[in-house]
Image 1 (cartoon, one colour):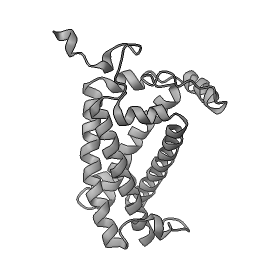
Image 2: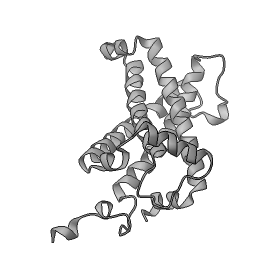
Image 3: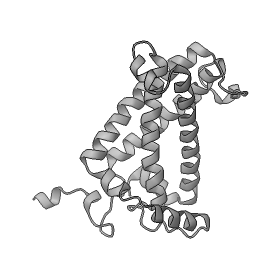
Image 4: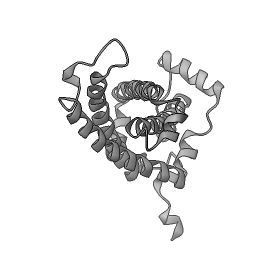
Length: 209
C-alpha cells in the first residue's frame, strides 16, 4: 500500500503523469498575483520619493496616490510572505528544491546558456530543469528573501533597526529593495517569454500535466 502513496512527482520522468503538483501550482499563481500587486503599488510608492531621475507612468502603477499604494502594498505583502513561507517549507520538506535545483555547476550553466542563445536547448522533459532554469529559480528565491527583508527594514526602521543596520542603513535598504524589484521584473519578463516559447510548460503549471 505504501508504494501506492508515492506521488507522481517522485516517480521516474517517463512514468510520471503529473509534472507540477497541486501545491506548486497553487503557490505559483498566488505568488504571481501578489508580486504583480506589489510591483505596481511599489512603483507608485517609488514615485512619491524617486531614487533616480525618473518615475513610472501612472498607467502602470496601483493605488492612485501614496496612501492608496501603501494599502495595496501592505495587503499584498502579507499574502506574499505567508504564501512564500509555505512554498519554502514545502520545497524543503518534500525535497523538491534538492531534486529540482541541485546540483548547479558553472560548466553546466555555461553550456546550457550557449544552447539557449542558439535555440538548441531541449525542453522535452519538463520534469527536469536545465542548468539555466536551476540558476534562475534558485537566484529568484534568494532575491525574494532579500526583497522581503529590505522591505521590512524600510517599513519599520526603528522597530527593526538591527535589520536596517544590516543593510547599511535606511537609504541603502531602499536601493537594495529597488534592485531586487528590478531583478524580479526581469525574471518575470523572461519567465513569460519562455512560457510563450514553450507553451506546454504553461499548460503544466495550469493543469499539472
